Length: 315
Ligand SMILES: Cc1ncc(C[n+]2csc(CCOP(=O)(O)OP(=O)(O)O)c2C)c(N)n1
Ligand SMILES: [Mg+2]
Image (tube, rainbow, N blue to C red):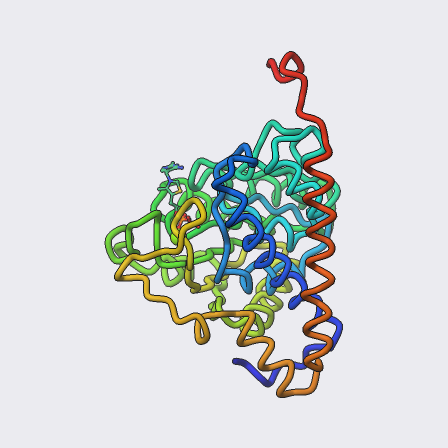
């Protein structure tokens, strides 16, 4: 774990809170999901929380981030209210996409989430367009494309790098590389390292995506580069997926071994916070308890919210 960072205690606690919210939401979903109370597939982010938390602490509402199919982590970290996400999972009108989207199609205009795409790579060009729009409109905001290693196989990824570099678009390409595209390991779907090739087009940053301080530092540099140059940058974060691609079962692929201590961004960060006396054991416990209360409220809100009128759902 990177220890040299001059992180402020409130930033550290904010990132911990974000990671724990993503994790504790996933842990609530696991036993409920088989009961069919949620009207959506779910792609959980357990093990990957540090990427969203370490990036989004540097982003503002005016920065427009378009997500892929694994939305819960980045959406919550960017500011989507927990209630709004849980209600969407439950298919209720109070959900962030008014029950029209489910887990893979989230929207929050207020917090700079113009949408997400279940078409792998579909969000990348859109983020470039939004980044260009920010620049043309004179906004200080940037575009952010948040995608997985699987999306770098798509032609649109390469076109987007080229266009963003050529036209100097303020957009950050964030690759959350969990080494898997569904059940396919990276070695079988990726011929060359996309981050190395991205270096031909723009500045490239690399972070250990299981270490929130590493992401925090590198994302800070990458976001500042985009903001100040009004041109693109690429950030590659390696991480690990603990659950199966979709659903609530643990991954059991022999080529994706997980060490629940060493690979856990939350365990690692809590150890750091205690060691450096940025937090006490009591403070850490209080964060978890507060999130449990927020989750109680969010699930009660979702369950009490109405289903949409079928006629209103017609297009
Ligand atoms: C264009 C397209 N091709 C294939 C799929 C099926 N598919 C859904 S998710 C996925 C894997 C994506 O892997 P990655 O981008 O690394 O994201 P991760 O699931 O690892 O977060 C695939 C192939 C799809 N949704 N869209
Ligand atoms: Mg992947």
